[in-house]
Image 1 (cartoon, protein in one colour):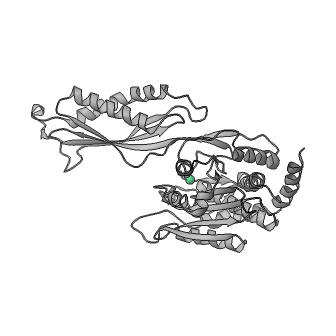
Image 2 (image 1 turned 90 degrees about the vertical axis):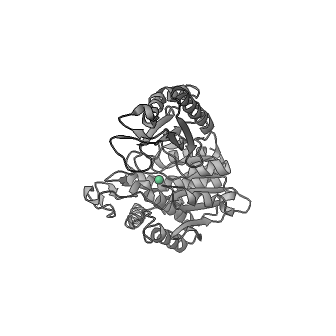
Length: 415
Ligand SMILES: [Zn+2]
């Protein structure tokens, strides 16, 4: 065994002694019990309170902490352990916002209760992702408590607005620490699998313009609803054609083009005897590695022209709602992947399991803006986020904290 590995294992044992289950659980409960759903019409419904606790906790542990407002009441918290100058920078990333609890009465335990039952911690954000964030915080604190001098800088980034515009991540990548990062571990719930691939996404708004008329005299107008039907009917074939052009991903399968909204009329009151002037569709487009957003856009534009050609008087407009987030794929031999794989083996004694991220995370912004390798790895079943009775397994939670500490040690080195 090389000397550096032996040294790392010795230091690792010392560091892991500073990760306690009770503490990681208590910290997760504390974060879960602070609601942080963002509601634009309520000045108190944001990430401010939970970000404050994250900043105070990390500061008390001796990390340098920066709190940067992204929008009113929406602060990014960025904390770091300074290592040897000139060394690499590794980011452990999490987000402080959570999605709505929905109907609170439908939960077996209150969504903000943080109740522990049969080895599971319940609450909105338990998995997505206050558990992962608490694990990252505990990992950084353990390295500090063990007195390890890292060979580079370890950053814990607790960012806002992941569930919507990802403005927290967009701001972070433009800061000096964001610009300095060499790799990142995204601490989202992936049942502690190393996820090297994640889907990209964009939303397309399709507006179909026709001409308003009396329902009794359809020949006097141009019906945009019929054209919308033709457009929707052609989508499955288009989806298959686009998918054939890219290698099938073992973890993510094929790309998807899914209609999620369909509306007519777009303006005015809906009436049973009126052909409206416009109909609207929204398509949720999920990209797998190897498929560019532009390729799908071009195919949708082609379909729009086909529909127009078949129905004189119809005009079909396709717009992309926000800039596309491209899919990501990190090579297996990237240093951060090897470090985390080593960490999983060292901490759990089993071989690392690999997986893929079906949704899209702040990591897509890191890759698009900084081109760095990322791995998504965190506690919590990937199916439970955004559902009632969201929870995280305590064993996975503690394992994640240990793996983050070990990966940081391995990636950055210690002196
Ligand atoms: Zn999340």
